[in-house]
Image (tube, rainbow, N blue to C red; front, top):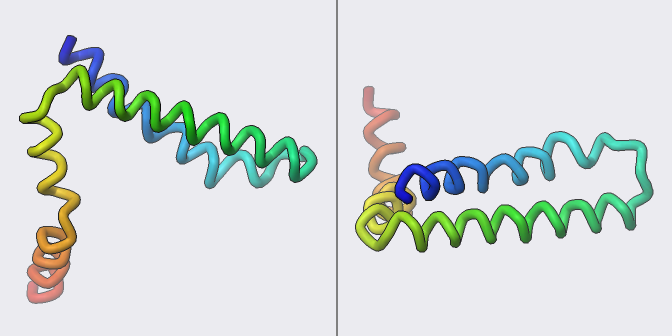
Length: 82
């Protein structure tokens, strides 16, 4: 089950890439592009939250630490000091 969770976690980022880099350049109407964006965003969120359920609290807590603003700011400051 953990492999399925990791797969869903990785796959949940692909629709966001499509939203930013593919859909805007399609020769479609604005209404259709908006519909595609909403469907992709909802699909990405569903994949992400299913992966959270499958991976469990420990894994989510580990990754949440990496996205905490204080941790990110510390990494940026340490990178600039080099």
